[in-house]
Amino acid sequence: MKTRRKEIKTMAKVTITLDTEDMQLTEDFKSVGQLVTMLKVASNAPSAPYMTKSEVARFMGLKSVTPVDKWIKKGLPVVKIDGMNTLIKRQTLIDWLAEHETTE
Image 1 (cartoon, helix red, strand yellow):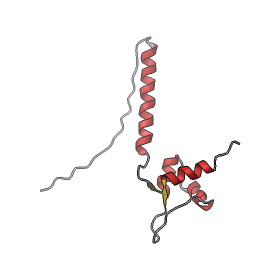
Image 2 (cartoon, helix red, strand yellow):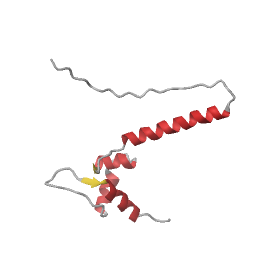
Image 3 (cartoon, rainbow, N blue to C red):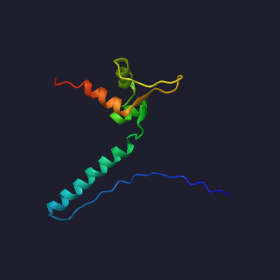
Image 4 (tube, rainbow, N blue to C red):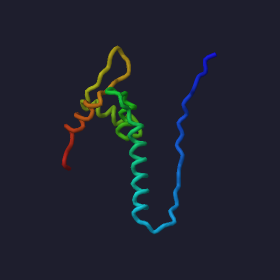
């Protein structure tokens, strides 16, 4: 009989209390916390070269796809084949956003 394994991802919250006056140690722990936060954000970002609208929203830190839909109406290039999901190339998105940068 084949055994199926299911990977379960959990995030534990860790609180560390330092009973020391070593400021460098305190700063080192803050740096580790910032690194963990950066890794968490990076691990949630899609890595495929093409993304769905919801993946684009998550990649950009948006709460919904509404801004992505508006960008598409304003000219953001997309890939749509035979009525399947709208796909957006990661580099195309980055380039298109760069073209719309302003110094307001």
